[in-house]
Length: 213
Image 1 (cartoon, rainbow, N blue to C red):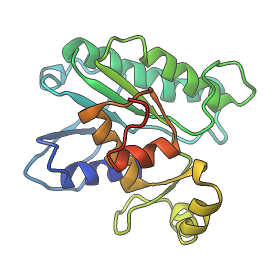
Image 2: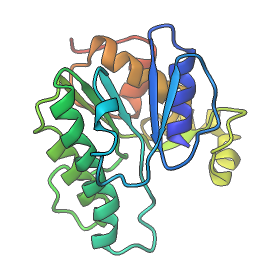
Image 3: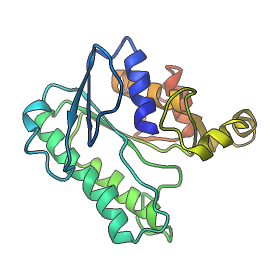
């Protein structure tokens, strides 16, 4: 859902010149500035490395729910998979800004009781070590989907109906998918004063505001 939404906003943005989507299957979107690579193994990019240079941003939106998963399996999909991509991209594009979709409540200390939060925290911490031009760690909570897109979860659509109530009562824990996509674009264009982008920061960035600069 997040990847589709970020792609949608990137296509709409006049600030985005070209887009490369890497996926296991076609995304089903057509646009003059969009290219696609169908790739099966996200732990090995050797077969497509020659197509990954010349980009100044990565919007890394892959991920799974931790529900019912053992920590070893969740870590392989969440940490290992992300770091494999970062290793290749940092080598090929040292001037790149890496935007990673993490989650509200991520445990930067990596010591808490919540498994997914520890793994996400470890992933965030490791990404900061690669020497990218910038690393921004987006921590959305509930995300209101973009109307008309195909990948929205049923629960997100249902809860999205009462989004105005959530935004008023718990603004620190909710955001709109279009704001998340626009915030990622703005982070690459103008940066932000801190790497951890919480829901409130997502809204500010999406509006072009950079408090603290």
